[in-house]
Image 1 (spheres, each protein chain N blue to C red):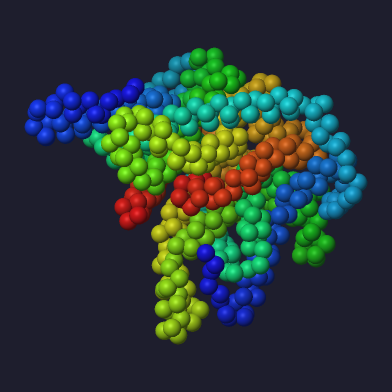
Image 2 (image 1 turned 180 degrees about the horizontal axis):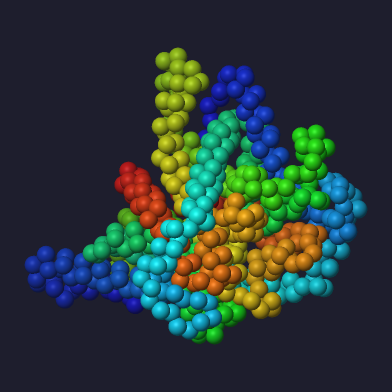
Length: 280
Length: 315
């Protein structure tokens, strides 16, 4: 695990300097967001931005809750993200198992098709989806948004989980079947427990994708009480006044669940990323 | 749901072995298709049908809010191909994608090489590098929009106090600066993906190869170009293609930062589709923009798919 050491001194110094610069650039925007969020909101109109301050307050947060249905947006987003995750991971697990383990005609073509669908652009699909939901009077209806989110999360999960199933030794399953287990039993009792880390990564990613999604939510929702966080927060910048304190406060709250999730599950996520399977 | 694989043996216990095997294969196929069915139905209904509908729309004059959509053949496409805005968007998409990808790859490679060294507190540095990737994209874009603010933005404050510029820079308002500014946000958010995948690739390069190169007296550069680089090339290629596809399609970063402006300075194909179809009301023509993106996209996906299946075969 421990890398070899480059002995060249100049190169090492250059590496350190570059790393230091990149770390500062990586840290600065989240730091600045947090500082702005915990400031008296009036400071964000000043010509000299506040880079450091001990004058901390929750005013931006209380303003945000008073003036906008932020908590409704948060619960809408949670609802949509959790439902689309549960639904797509369950459906995709079955499909991924099938594509990675069972032999039948057309399997590899279907595998490639899934991959294709995953990378299919939402900019091509949002217009027909908008037209259909409009005709069915289902714009502003959150269950419809959940269904739309399955367009990317089902193929994505199939693809991620398929790679994961391939790492589980086939022999374990064969052994269970020799002992009289059916395929369904061996899937549920032998394969699934071993696939748990992969399923966890799939859940984290589908949750993140839904939590972040902008284009569909932006085009399909127009009623402010049905907004997700992505659409609600963005509406604030397209308003007449820029409410940066409130926007940053909303950003802190929107980031918190994902940051917690990432740092708790970092090891798994890195493994999932390394499988080369994830959005960049 | 439980398909008894063993059952085939009992029924055909007296039949020749090949018949048992055939039943087994058939049971497996039925089970396989059954497990695929729910996903397949969802994908056909939610992606397949809208896709065909999109193709159909692109041959019609369909306006937002109007019921009738007369067939106009290739007119939407002809109109786009004769429109300078479309070609500007093609060029912008190319600049945005290649610019972002090039910088992400170079930066990702450099940081991965550094983090692969035996550094003190390496885990901490790695977590910090992950931070931009862990933040919701949308929040990052909003923070950058705030930092880019002309009047009260922190970047202008830093630039003027460091005497880098004597006047406030219109980061998102100056046509010459806006494109680099949106690329910077894409790079900020996306480079950790390159770091992490390349780092994982570096750890699969066998230590013996380095030792052997050292014994042969190879210096830093030959060791890098003949051991490290070939070792991480496959993973770097897959990451690059992946990121290229997603950057090519990216809508939210540009839309939130500039809406494709000023003028058309950052208008890419994704934002052009939206501009034509929703504010511009021409749904059919808007879809046609996306359809024209498909050949390049499909090419990239086929290439990526080939890379990945080759890697899976080797594994």
